[in-house]
Image (cartoon, rainbow, N blue to C red):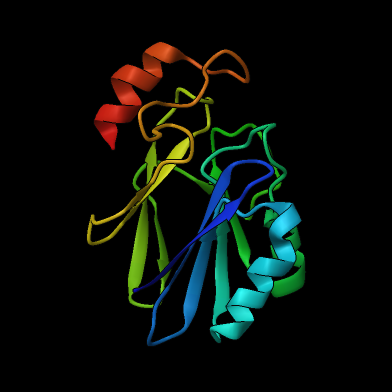
Length: 160
């Protein structure tokens, strides 16, 4: 599997690009609107077709690029069914699979940072994309947008 980790210094947001090296189908996780040109350029440079654009959660700390990637590249957008927004092509639930080429990401509901947080786990279980549910030496805030510290500690981190 092709893997790229990208970073937006302004919002401190990591974006992840995964692709099947044989079929060239790709997914992008947590894209940032201000980095749209960078991400589209990378997809083109690598000869990839973006099948899905996914967010781990909807939050005020960055403006997502999902809608723009749908508009410009025809990617389907994926958000948690619990995110509280109706703009996603796919409203994901716990256990759903997002397939690209020979690979898949399993959706795991991991509420706490926000009510609609999800983690995407690769089918080989080698990688988990947690958004702000789990950080190095910490976790995301729980004091706004339906955050819940108890859920984050008891459910989300155990569930991953």
